[in-house]
Length: 252
Image (cartoon, rainbow, N blue to C red; front, side, top):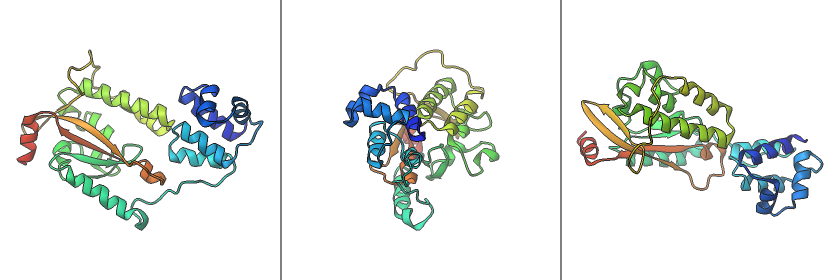
């Protein structure tokens, strides 16, 4: 197989699609797709991008597919601190500020905190200083026994939610860093959820400043990114799950 054929077949398997299913979605023959995957046919740049689109391949991995096929990357990777992305970063910071007095963080593809709003210290107070030293991984911070974990009242349920989500993300992206992070967090203490939580969402029940708060999380991503860096950014916000939490936070 050619390198690009190997990668395409791996992504197809990751998405649990047959050759027939992918060929139909991409508008190519099953025979040609088979030839591409086995290296008997060299795909064009347009074919690689079409298949990557149907497979929902992240932009970073699409560039890797193009390079494996002998083509230049299609998507730039901007510097988030550079001038080209300054306007977008400023707007994302406005979104963070707009969530106040509720906590919200801007994260990259590995759950490293890029920025956070003024309400975040309410959740991180009491964490070990080394866990708050940049680069801060927000999942490690949340589940580590020296981080936020001792103050999470429903740690087994929240831990199960985080690990399940991270496992799905590692599977969907094929990112070994996420898989390693999942295995690291899985080894931390915290217990196992005994049953599915009641209610509409899995809450984060958190004790801070003498008050037990209840949050649900919302993840926001850019809708139409054409830059690798922007494609990998997300805002994770924590909104009140009950009136008491909202009242407490608005009084801070």
